[in-house]
Amino acid sequence: MKSLLLLVAIGFVACLVLPEQRSSLGCQMCELAVKTYVGSADKDVTSIKKDFDTECKKLFHSIPFAPQECEHYVNEKLDPIIKELESGTAPKDVCSKLGECK
Image 1 (cartoon, rainbow, N blue to C red):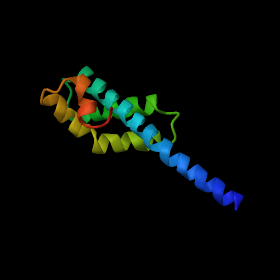
Image 2: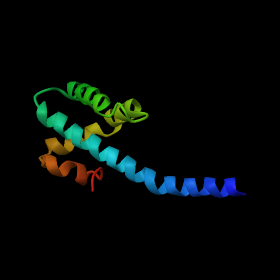
Image 3: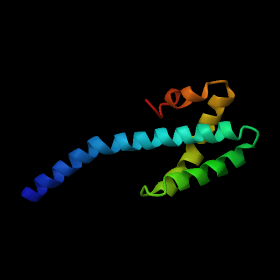
């Protein structure tokens, strides 16, 4: 019975903590994506994606599943970030506009 109660408590705490950590990681990845784009605006999208993936994996190497998260970010979230920047959204506003940062 104590084991079940402990597992429920751990599950509850994980539900409260994990979304915030993921949100924070998403914010950091978004900010890195903006920085990568702004620093290499003359490159094509393929080069920007490659540069972001390399920097992301280097920066977040100590986080479990970081390589997969970086690849997911490249495949799912980098295009909307680039579109926002190309449409004239200020770099400092892109991540909050897309809901990645608070």
